[in-house]
Image 1: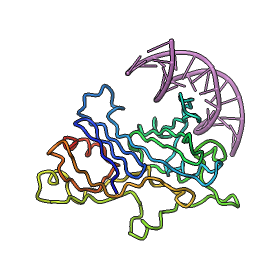
Image 2 (image 1 turned 180 degrees about the horizontal axis):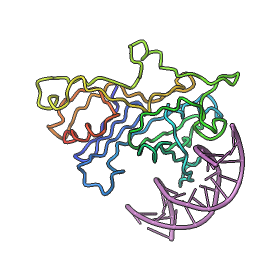
Image 3 (image 1 turned 180 degrees about the vertical axis):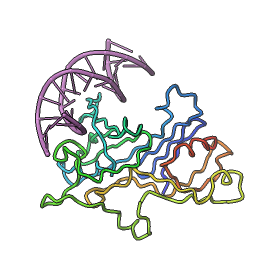
Length: 236
DNA sequence: GGCATTTGACCGTC
DNA sequence: GACGGTCAAATGCC
């Protein structure tokens, strides 16, 4: 499943079937807290140009900006969590249509939601903008849909995994406790049937070619608790 | 009225 | 100076 892993002492980047997940270590001497936030991206394909359903990932986002990016055909939209101020949730994301494929969106997430709120209610401007709720042909709102294959595996949240150390006795895995569960919220798309998440993060086998500390780590990557990940970032 | 998006201006980084 | 990211005033919708 792993396509590529790029890692050094400060940064680890996973590229898995088109889905890039990068973590900036909190120990890398960054200037701001924002830079220490986990960052990952995914690509989402829609069925039609008008179909922006996949951009509703279950959280409530507020658009705060849009920029034309040099060399990019389409502008980049900037979103932050609606509860940024009320709950100090600093999750944000950037959405940009791919140049070569208008049906493909590049979505980059920064930080994890510290708010516990999902966008169960329909956004006020659901008919416009880039995170409208997916709707059925008759205009009814589509309920949350879980990827069938993952649902079959008993995962209500398709991107919530259990840690799976390859070797419970190894020094590396002892600090990465089995059963440690966190949630990759951005990938919980209620619009799974409407789109194709090009990259799925399921099982990451991380093998270092440059750092002996990283040798043959095999674990289930989980995203919702970056603090834990960053605390253990010495492995990267 | 409250909350959302839009969009030009501003700021920080390279 | 160019560029990307964010701010905030203006505006619109419910």
